[in-house]
Amino acid sequence: MWTLPRLQTLLASLLTAVFLLWLIVPFAMALLWSLVDPGTPWSYPDILPPALSFERWTLMWETTTLSTAMFNSYTLAPVAAVTAIVLAAPTAYAFARIDFPGKAAAQIVTLTPLVLPGFVTAVFFASILVSFGVYSRYGAILLGHVVLFIPYAVRILTVSFAQVNQEVINAARDLGASGWGVFRAAFWPVLKPGVLASFLIVFILSIEEFALAFIVGSPSFTTIPTILFSYLGYDFIRPNAAVVALILVVPNVLLMLVLERLLQSANPANVSGKG
Amino acid sequence: MPGIDIEGVAMRFGQVDALKDVSLRVPEGAFVTLLGPSGCGKTTLLNIIAGFLAPTRGRVLFDGQDVTGLRPEARDTAMCFQSYALFPHLSVQENIAFGPRQKRLERAETARRVTGLMEQLGLAPHAAKLPNALSGGQQQRVALARALAVAPGVVLFDEPLSNLDAKLRDQVRTEIRDLQRRVGFTAVYVTHDQAEALAMSDTVFLLNGGVIEQSGGPRDIYFRPRTRFAADFIGAANLHDGPISGGAMDTPFGPVPVDAPDAAHRTLCWRPEVVRLTEAGALSGKVAHVAFQGGWLDLFVTAGGQTLRLQVSGTHDIPEGATIRFDIPREAVVVLKDGANA
Ligand SMILES: Nc1ncnc2c1ncn2[C@@H]1O[C@H](COP(=O)(O)OP(=O)(O)OP(=O)(O)O)[C@@H](O)[C@H]1O
Ligand SMILES: [Mg+2]
Image 1: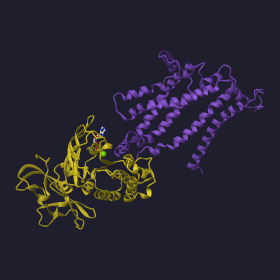
Image 2: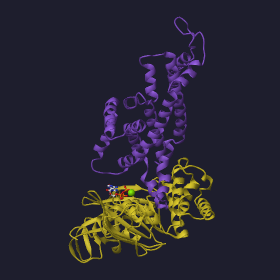
Image 3: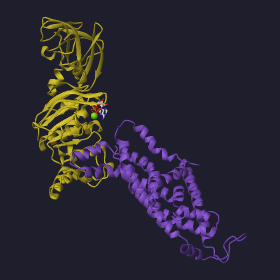
Image 4: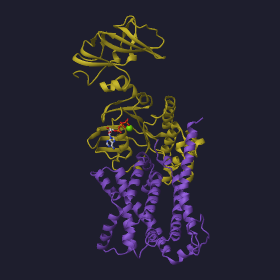
């Protein structure tokens, strides 16, 4: 007999299997390719590489600017994320909790960066920066990422701020809490998941952002996507690209796992204060 | 334990006048209720007393001191919210300790108060639970304990029992009143339940459309309503329109006695349970419908196309279709102020 729960279990396992395949196959392929020994190429009709070695890894790490690119990306991303959250918070608060004339229009305007193609923004942004006298590549890309990704933070945090229960705020004040006390008791538990989600999203978007980093930074200033592009571009060497791709993906996966944990411990259903 | 004076308070939200010129006085240590239908401005008035809202006009005084501009955290009030508004990430114990901690009370004193309140309200077994894990009645008690933990002079209740079932409501109602007498605080209690208001209060303030329609002791407000609204909102009422002459009004049921001078048009009002069934009664009518309620009997009596509602002891056995005679005591009949031509 096909009962509904059994069908659901089956579907769920099937879906999980598909996802795993989808994740694991490219990952395994990349791993294999990255271990191909430079001396003995892997070519048709061999099913597996004839010889494996870590030589590509050491080679890539030593001879390229990969480490600089990683340093750039992994410092840009968290700084951009924190800055975006800090700058987005007051706007989100206003959108969620204050009525003011022109609010609807303002909300649409803050979202417009989301619909513009990245390259369009990047091209004009680069020229604006130059005319403002911002010549630091790092600073320019940081500024660019903050501006580009603030809408996401505003959007997410607006929802979070709206979930804060006014009666809980009042209760905290009523019991003598100061501004900071009210924030900790009434706001933070509800905002936390939104702040973490905003951080995660801006972080990942910044790590992956190509257009602006390429236009403003290349060729001297590299980030992870621009250096990846240089390996996928004219002189495409598959094993080298595989090494780069793997190096790039590992920190992201770790980050995802850590934040997922944090998000779970801050389940909004437990803290929204409704009901 | 301050007394409260509200002087000419008005509150406007955009185009809505939530309160229009409300003045009232709550004596120190009294238990008063703000009673009224949904949207009449009860919560708004409570929020103004607590300091969450600044009134558009008027003043709030505690013991004669103007506190209108004072922030909520600086007022000697604590509120029990309609939705409880417990801190969902804090345990029962931490919720109750929140106020004392914010006020930087000594640790030992905080612990003493928290344990004491948990004992009194039967929350001790739930000390470590989060609010989510509690029933509505338990959450209600945590909200009450949390408010009392700051030893406030004034406790503001916003329909605290509206989410409880009938039995629990009776129980918590008594607990609140007991606690108020024992601990000693001035209580302002908001409700739209007339039975609750009558049972608990020293004084009832009946609100309607942002104004105080009538105020007084529970008996006064029940038996001597001054307006149609008051007569209607608090229990059932029988009304008669017509001229008064010689201390009575002629109705299809007979003459209804009233202590009032002659007048061309007046509206009289009396409560269903003041009626006395007697063979020698001056009034009579045909019983159209009988509803047995256990302790009492509701009789719907008609004459000349009008219907009256009478309430008599449940021990009577009166068949539908019977003609009954009854009396209404003169002192139980009031003339309404907003009745015909008044
Ligand atoms: N923040 C606000 N903005 C606009 N209008 C409001 C606001 N708060 C209350 N009102 C309006 O003021 C009136 C009184 O509201 P209030 O909450 O005081 O009613 P209430 O008597 O507590 O009703 P209920 O029994 O339903 O709780 C209502 O018409 C309401 O819509
Ligand atoms: Mg209300």
